[in-house]
Image (cartoon, rainbow, N blue to C red; front, side, top):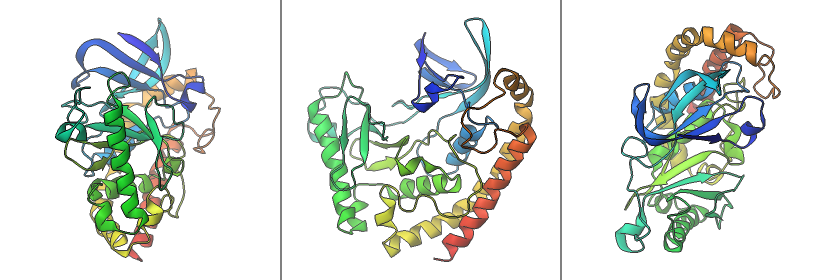
Length: 332
């Protein structure tokens, strides 16, 4: 295997996250075989469970795939380094983002239409990337890989993305929906609104994918440990990315309202998962605390709390937020 550091801001913290690439595909802890895995450190998260809870919520939505993960104890070079969340990396695969995997020879016709994995991220550090024409979004092409993609494929997805934005820019929801799957877009929005994820404002860590002859689908969910599950009662993302334009269209607001009333019940059931996870990782949390008692970034507001107080705060903040969103959305 190969192991290397991962992340942008997370790599600057004392407790480091890592990417793993195995020499051959292996199933790990009951998760399907693959070469690529991530070890999330959750350093700034006093509960250690924000990412895991967000993934469980994402699995309740219509998004095509959400990473699986397991809490583990990591020993690196014979040194225990604490509790980590071992999860599936975002890759095209039958058991992950299940879309067509392109070859460099796919340069025309149906073959050039997919599949692509894109990440909207203001770090803007991919080899193949572009800023969109109408909303200036930073699009990083994650797959095809940098050593496989060619200019034909690059220009195709760039033109496709800009064509979608053009429809929205000129106010056509119907035209926009010819390019973007509205079900996953709405569910992805509601997930990020429910957990109060501020990353859409940059945007950062915002993934979408496109299959051959398919539309852009939002997801997978990713990177939910920064300021999420904190006490906030107002909308956070209704003016981010495409959503400022979309929410000026009454039909879209009605679609969001209808979907919210179907998701709010399942979302509220996450309390059971939180409680189960609380006990599952309690001993691991206590040992992790002896290694990493101080958190240098207090964005989540729980650095001074013990384990149960931090988990209780996460849980109550989320339930209160669901109630606030329910009042706001159903008043439309």
